[in-house]
Length: 248
Image (cartoon, rainbow, N blue to C red):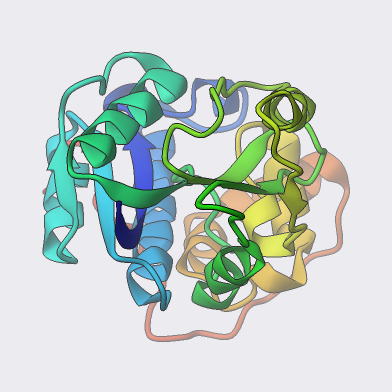
């Protein structure tokens, strides 16, 4: 296989994104949040050293345009097959081209940094060409970064309770997992409580997602709901929300 690890990012069609945030966010706000989060993850992946390329599995026109804008490849096959199906479609594409490894990441971890992605790559030490490295979600339920060599070394099944099953699957495949807890990668945003955790996370400072939450008034809404202290952010280059659905 060629010596190259590709990042694979599945992105569902954003019009229906983040339904579990509906108790707190309107449909337009959910689309805007999904857009700003995906943009930040894409930029972190593109800036990380050590990746051979980025592959985005999506049918969403806006996400595809953003991905191509940073030089990523876009694959549509499997884009409506859920997170696991989309990742598997990416794996098939990489195997067809004989790439060495695959790093799967979601598009809702806006505090992830290039340095954290590089830390996952650095922890990956495949023996005889086979390896499994994972960065868990903050609750040790989800699998927020999974690095495999070769791309199909371990069968993957994502969901709300995938972290420990993935560890078990790796060991059944004869691989001892390398586990890399990283605060930015760990902080995925799926539920209203996740927004409160994100706002309290030091790594959220300086992200465009945090700035947008503050500028849109959602952060204040979250703080009232969870009785968190107020925070007045510095004005940094404008924090206007990204375009809402149908605005661009």
